Length: 249
Image (cartoon, rainbow, N blue to C red):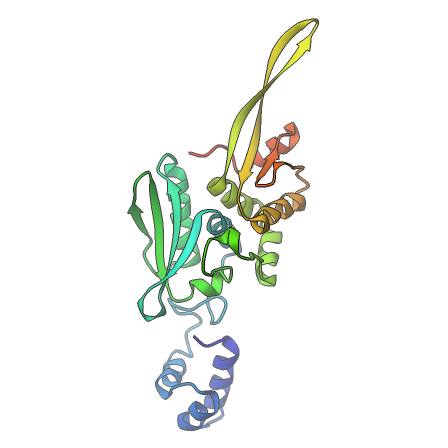
């Protein structure tokens, strides 16, 4: 994989009449690759182009959604020839979630098929691409809660522009909307009071902080009843989340 600066330098050199052999020695890029870049110069983007290291375009809203899903229930696994599989596990009880996950992946990388692999009780939504690590630099060995999870600056900018969809991905993967109840005494009579609230659970303190940050961007109050669980229970806050998350289906 070559970054856009290398591509641009090579194209400028070719446009200036420098030989492919000279450019290849200078940049360490094969002549076959240089010829391919030269022949495709007239096209703006190509099906395999990466939004981070080439000329591809990254749809911010869909990516914010997919990032939330990935941090919740996603992983990358390396296959032959440096191809990576993006896998996001979705509970079979929520077919809408499975469809949304497939749509988000397809929007981010539309030139390759999205597969649905059935397992016991869940469906893995899978897509193959060499450039998934470019889009998810959080990838690394071991479970996410055992390593540092930090967003790159460009990821922070996308989430700041689309916090609603980022939160939708997080809550649809590792969260839920539940009905809670409490009892209170009114006029000497104990009455049951029910109310909805959102819960988000994750063992990674870093991912939990990202959820808190996104909620803060929208001025949605939250609290931590446990170290690995976040609650949004105020009526106005629940109503705000209902606008772009709602119950799983």
